[in-house]
Image 1 (cartoon, rainbow, N blue to C red):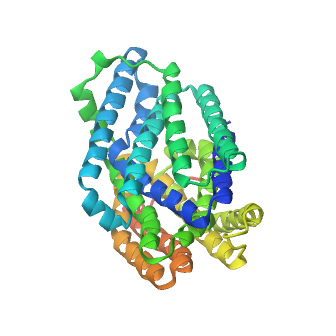
Image 2: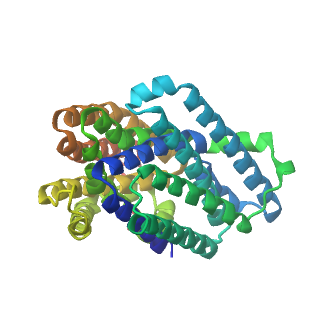
Length: 404
């Protein structure tokens, strides 16, 4: 059901891309990219903390957890938005956008923050069916409104669809309240300190992830034309998000619990052996999906086997990196520290690669940079994790045997 909801949302993205110009869709994805980065500072990984804390807490303690997380996030999110507006002269110059675009990005970030947090409340309380039904209903509303306004009313202004996306995020947050209790008097300063401390390592990883996989659109905004941003978003971001849905709502539901109980060294070695097959499967999936979906677009979106191939290569390597990341994250604090070290080492190389190639070749440079960046990340993660999880020597000079 979650996959259906995500599929409806993906369909809405395609409808909007088909109905507006590539340049307008480029602005849409630029706003979304900035919002995803800002969301990290507003949310502080509390949604991941809720996934862990709510299931293992006593029923009587859950309203305090929900209330503290929600009210604190609203205050922090509003504060970040105000700070962003006050810093607008610097941010607009740094990002290469106007004030209106920045305002949309901040508003979208706040709506996404509340959406993700309230979604985590329902999942943490194990109300999976309710979550899925609400997500499907809201996704259908978003698709219906967007399709009607495009096909019947002929609205081509991308700001309208940004407002619609913000509205549907808020709508889900409001209707999700049927699944949990918010009691303002239960807000606890001590509890929020504990929750933010718990999410600290995950927030560092989220910040690094936003830098590694979010600034490519900002670089394109500086060194390419607006229409290239829209084309890049469809050839790279759309298949990547579609694959993310398959992983998160399908394979990941089985894989994550398995990784959580498996020895870290064993898990990493098995992923290493499976990596070639994973790369080929996901690259093929991405290429096939691109061939089918982009037949519907044409126009300003070139039907290019070369662009599809570059995108598929990058997404294949990106999936391998995500597997290693999942294995380390399921290893608790130690695994998170290993992943943080690896990403810190790789970040300067990755950002330099993206900046140089995008400034040189624009759209094509961005696709090549995405593939190379993930290749660098995989290599660094393998080296760092191998050293961190090296088998301990035992008596007689032999190493511990891997348990099948």
